[in-house]
Length: 171
Image (cartoon, rainbow, N blue to C red):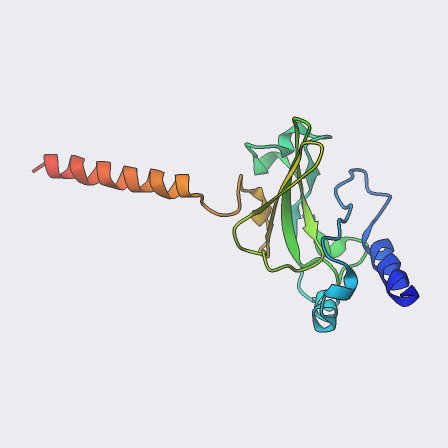
C-alpha cells in the first residue's frame, strides 16, 4: 500500500509543474496507477518522438475557446517541457462548471483507449460536465471536436445531393 502511494506521489510530482504560467498541466487521474498495466507504464515513459500541441486555457486567453483560430495561439513542443519522455499526445478538454465553459488545450502524458477516437463526455455533481478529446499527431488539438460529428456527415451528404440535383438540371 505504501509503495503504491509513493509511486503515485512520484508520478504526480514528476508530471505536475507548479511553475506553469497557466494552469493547463494539472493532471486528473481517472484510474489509479495500480490499474495501469506495467508494460503500458513503461511504454508511456519511454516515448522518443516529440509532439507539438496548442497550449492554452480560455480562462486566461479567450482566443483558446471555440471557435478556435490556431493562427493566434502559440505552438508548444511538448518534448521541451520538464520531462521530455512523458508527452505522447495532444488533448483538448471542454469543462462546463455551473454554466461557465472553459477550453483547455495542451500536452497529454498518459495514453488511453480513447486516443484518436471519438471524444468522451463525463458528468458529475454540482453541474459539472467535461468533454475530453485526445489525439496523437502534432497540432491535432485545434479542432472544435477531434472527429467529424454526425451533423458534419449529414451536412456533407446534403451538400452532395444538392450538387447532384443541380447537375441533373444542367442537362
